[in-house]
Image (cartoon, rainbow, N blue to C red; front, top):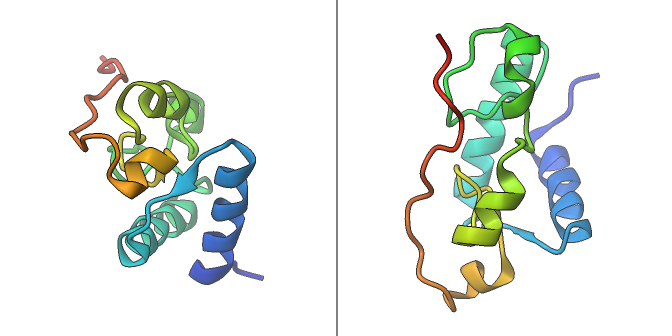
Length: 109
């Protein structure tokens, strides 16, 4: 049985809240990210971040399987993760300045 975008939305929302975070308040934006996650899951067998280039080599990409390894540090420093799926409550309310999150992942050779 394949998971629907709305089902994954609820799963991710609950996860975010359990971590003291939220999903981006722009639901359409979140559903676009979710579509990318589900497409990558179909393609590669795991939900790699759709905002990063995946190759299908899971062992090389465990750091970018959503939620990625960089999420917590990104939210701590910038208020959102790299793709702005997971955000702090202050980011959602506009209490902090929204700015692009730089890529923390080192380039692969």
